Image 1 (tube, rainbow, N blue to C red):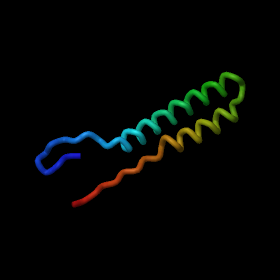
Image 2 (image 1 turned 60 degrees about the horizontal axis):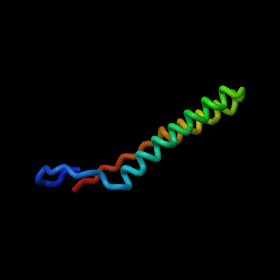
Image 3 (image 1 turned 30 degrees about the vertical axis):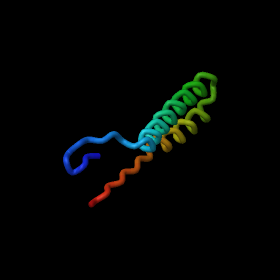
Length: 66
């Protein structure tokens, strides 16, 4: 975000936290899918891939006009 004087500011902590949560969820779903696939559970691997993709694929953008 930039103020009127064009000074850039750092994103707030909750924005960073949500980004990290999305990244961790994606990483865990990839690990779960790989583990399930390697242990002979292809149906569970597909279900975990769909759930992980849905969790990582949600993106919310808010535009505030002043």
